Every structure is written in C-alpha cells, then in structure tokens.
Image 1 (cartoon, rainbow, N blue to C red):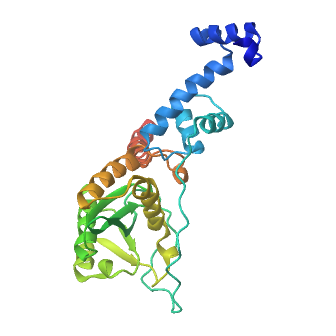
Image 2 (tube, rainbow, N blue to C red):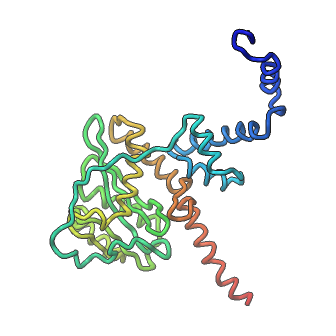
Length: 286
C-alpha cells in the first residue's frame, strides 16, 4: 500500500502512532484538536450564527488564549461560518417635510442607564397560513429586548401587548423615553394613553425615514437573519412564537453584542446595578 501511494512506511507508522496516542502529536495539533471541540460547542450553543469574531471573543471570555487567526483557520477547515445578513431592499425614503417636532432622540441612541430610552418596532414573518407580525421593545443602554409579542395582525393590540410586557418587567419610574417610527400602531390613542399613564415620554421619528429608528431596525434585522431566514419555512403563529421566545432568551442572556463590549445585554445591566449599589458603600468607607 505504501508503494502504491508513494508513502514511506515510517511516515505511515508515525501517523498511526499519533492517531492511537494523541499525546505524541505536536503541540499545535493537540491545541487544534482542543479548539475544534470548543469552537463546535460554542457554534452549536449559539444557534450556529456566530462567526469568527464572536467565537473568538467567547473563547477569550472562557479563559482560552487563542489568536483570532487560529479560530479563523480552524473554522475554515471545519466548514463553519457565521450567518450573513442579506441585502435589504430599501423601501422607505426621507420625507420632504420638516422633521417631526416630537422626535426627542434625533438619531442618538445612546443611553447612560437602563430604562432611559426604549426603541420599538415590529416586523413580519411569512408562514404557510399567512403573515405573522412580531413587535419588539429594546432598551438602548444594553440592547436588551424588554418586551415582545407576535400576532397574526399588525393592530394596536400587537404593539400594546409588547409595551405591557416591558412595563411589567422593568422599572419605568426614573424618567423614560419611548421612541418609535411614525406607524399608526404607535400613534394610536390607546398606545399614547398607556405611555402617559406609565409616565413614559413618547418620541416619534419623521415619516418614511428608517434611520430615525435605526437601533430597532438593527434588532429586527438580526432577528430575521439569525432566526427567520435560517430556520424556516414557518408553519404558523405558534412555531414563530416558540422560536422567537428561544431567540429572545438567548439574545438577552448569552449573545455577545459588539457595541456594548462583546458581552450579553444581561451581563451589562448586572454590572451597571452592581456598580450602582457599591457606590454608597465606597462613599461610606471614605
């Protein structure tokens, strides 16, 4: 066999010895085998959407000292790649009118604390029995999804249910702005009254400009890329709801988010409140 394949017998026996006893392999081969297992584990545990950068950051978070180029090389050899967002057809254009005077955000989606600025939007999912609409409310500080709801119609009830969930789950007593696009669901009397009742100040972007609600549009894009386009076709509302529930939990507690330092939203909020609660203690020690 060695003669036919033009391989030296010593090469064959060396290969078999290392195959039977991994400890005889080179240090690089041994580390590659270890990292391949860890990369596959992280990839599978995160809906198979992570690319090189996020897997590298997650390995570092877990204490592994590995170069990004190594992760890239191994993922390429394993045939793994992160999910790629498709090109979105532009369907909204800026209005020729002046900007809405009630836009309190002015495309600045930064926040110094949780529950300072929420952004809201909804998207659609095609199923075998018709469209399903999914509404999200996102905290701009941490990018945490604080409220969501799915329904078969894009009525005010859809967005209002997502708002009720967010109000129930969060502390809105510290001064909060709720920002949305110019959709009728968000400008309905019921929705406006509920915001006022909760002490939340409403903010609305200009007509026809997606950039005025860019943060919410980004989360919608991630949702469509990481869940809807990868795991379809979708049968009905129940299938979309269950997948969205799984994704929201993973997004809030596990997914690394680059704009907040490659940590999950829940971890950022936990760190914020830990630091906040330690301030009086530190002041007392002085």
